[in-house]
Amino acid sequence: MRKQLKKVKFMAHAYIPGLKVLTNSEIEKQRILPIKGKVLIESGAKVEPDDVIAQTNLPGDVEMLNVANRLDIEPADILDLMQKSEGETIEKGETIAESKGIFGLFKSSLESPVNGTVESISSVTGQVVIRQAPTPIEVDAYIRGVVGEILSEEGAIVNSYGALIQGIFGIGGEKRGEIVLAVNSSEQRLEADMIQSDFAGKVVVGGSFCTKEAFQKANEIGVSAIVVGGFDYADLKEILGYTLGVAITGAEELNTTLILTEGFGEIPMAGRAFRILKDMAGKQASVNGATQIRAGVIRPEIIIPHEDKQTEISDKADHSVHAGSLVRVIRAPYFGEIGEIVDLPEKLSAVESETLVRTAKIKLKSEEVVMVPRANLELLEV
Image (tube, rainbow, N blue to C red; front, side, top):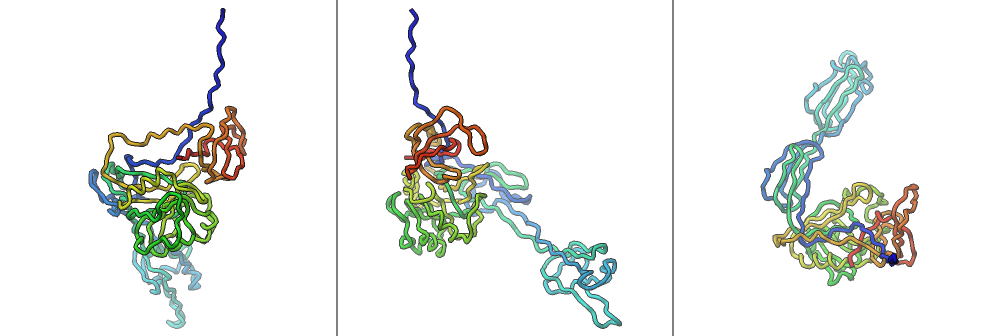
């Protein structure tokens, strides 16, 4: 007699990425010049965050002067009237060309609008090109560590070991400073009166939310960075003076870098992230608010080098999700929203681009139930 097979129903599972929140991690950072230059360090050298790795000079801006038009002469006559030759330096306000006038009278002259070097003189167009002084560029180590591979004429790779916490969103560039806690729990809001004057130059850890007033005060006194669970998206425009687009962040001209570990709104910082930051209080951290949420994802980060090496690196989180898992949406139109997975449909679904993708049914905190591509989700630590 043929045995009847019993049908077994399996719970749907999926694997999605999560932010790195690690106490112990091998860390590798490429420190690269924007154009080729000179590497100042050797492989194996121990470096501190402010140590210069490499340097170069960005070519200065070009100033183009139509001397022929300005002096009302023929382009072919320009060489006879030039007071400076190609390759010579010139100061702002110094005469660059002078007409002969009539019987030595009624001369016209043209002054240089900038400091620089005469790069070219054209008797065809009558134009003179002045190249302003180059801009020196230095790349520092960013983190404490040991120099690994040297990238010829470009920079180097710095290796370190320590805690690594990635955020969901940030503004502001690379900063460093001592970690200080301004709150007692991951659920406490960071208010303006909690920002003390001796926080200048430090990395301040908040809880669930940073008020606009707290950030403005921190920016005024020179706090290096604020790390907090959430922030009001509407306040970003007032702080920056413009609406933040979808391009990469990190180039904002701010004294204080802001890193959100959870998203927009009032969201308690993940327990593990808060515990690591609390345990690391008093240690030096390197932070970067640069964020890119499209192709070539870049996460804001907090790196805290330390010597307490463990035999096992803790980068082995289980990123499997199922019905009931808490997730964060990392793409528009629900960017930063947190919800619970209701279902993981097996069938592919069409999105706006008409591409068929695997989706998840999510119940947001607002009770709204939405379908989101699984690639647009991150596992949220409970």
